[in-house]
Image (tube, rainbow over all chains, first blue to last red; front, side):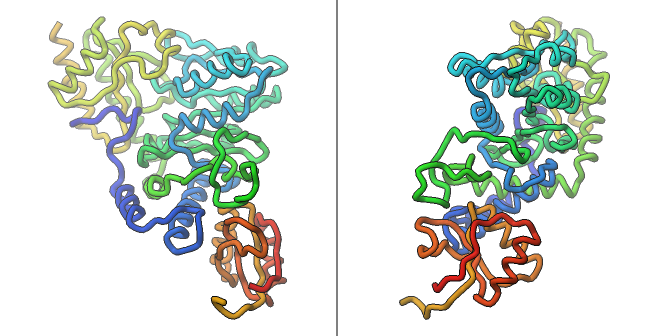
Length: 379
Length: 79
């Protein structure tokens, strides 16, 4: 199989990820539950992962790196834990449902006011719209670093400046950028940075987290076992324990930690350049194929995503043909990004997303282009 | 009695991460002591503490301040 669905999850992981997980499965006790060597092995691994990720994402404090099971959980924790009745929040049409649905629910159930910055037909936002939508009670702006549909990069630094100038906070969804380009929360101006472990970070599914700037308060939505302060009726106040009730995914975090080692050894800047070259190779080839419509703005920095349609054909049929006839894995349909598809006018047809990783090769790109050319000729 | 009682310096922490940060800093700087379960004479419940010899009290206190480590209390206690 030629796997080009890396924006959903990366399939090819560095071998040390699996090795670390196997070792953890055979040796870990429960992190933060005792001081025997099994428990401490797990606790040390989780702690080292926090330190590594704090450095990786420019988070000033390792104890402000909170582990979750995925970025959807991270975003739910951040949004539900920061927004109250009477608050106003701004987001964008580029967002995934992991942002949109928590916001819609907060709007319906908690009386939070919501505005979305629209996207144009190329999938870009107008930054003046953030300014236009700000209100005195705007508590925060939440936006993606890159659209999971078009791959367009958002100038998060610019959004942060707008938010901070008005006393609002910025929550960033780095699902599509963490591990594939430098993501530094200080440089971006993020107050909360949400990440997932299983995409560009090359870790296992079931890992993710959030990095919190010192001084930002997030209420816990789940409370329970913490390994400390057992007789207190409330969850401990200190991060990360405040947001990490229950047994952690120590085995997964061991894999994620090994993945971060790989990224640091290879270098994120090298990965960014490598993926940019793959993306350009595919884009330049695909745009010449009769019947191909490519979405998004490829004139500037871009995540390793090219999304397209072939004629007016159903995206699911095209993706299925790529899989069945050529063994090429892509993602059709709506990609959990309803507002983005509405902006592109692709609600009915959906679109076929090709997404690349640092393990994708030029030969795989060329094979995908060749398959697209053949399908194009079937008309 | 499991073992002979002795007086120790014991540092308590608000959570596991803070205790592990102490452990990492001590290892890096050759400081004495090790992680132990929270002694019940200090706090009912669970959690991790740092135990060092009684005479290391001042050294440990100075180290906590110098490194800006997060902790709750430094005790001198018989365990």
